[in-house]
Image (tube, rainbow, N blue to C red; front, side, top):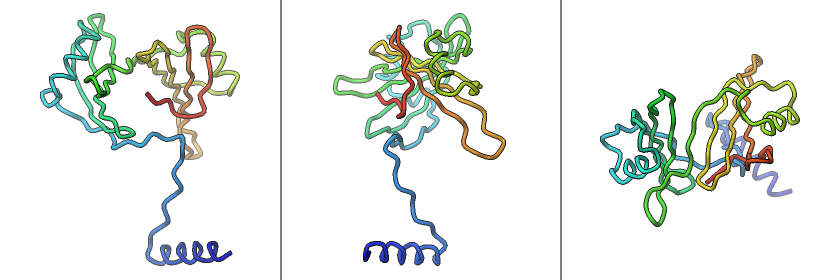
Length: 177
């Protein structure tokens, strides 16, 4: 009871100062420093070499840097010779920089049937406006489905589905490397 009174007094004091208490952290969220646009010339050569090794025909056009869950990342975007856009997510590990994820936008209808079925089973009325196919370095594919922001002012929908080549599984937490 004393803890409740102290908590209530703290909330009243913060409200009087015009500050609201911070919400409790959500365990399902990845802690990030936020992505920062980075000039390609400022990207370390080791990062670009690892990206080039993974996609030798890619033309680089942009990069972003961030620290996520205490690990250093670069996202390097560009195009393949056929004109399609691609993004490589690279992480710095004990043995240097490595591509941990290769992303591209796709049309939802081209996602494997088990992925479309898992989405329909979760919410038959949900139609994704954007789909990102994220190929992981271990062979798994994470499909990130984004829906339009509801007109009521709510949060946009974001659904992630893990696909191992045969089975699709709706994820309840944000996928992390």
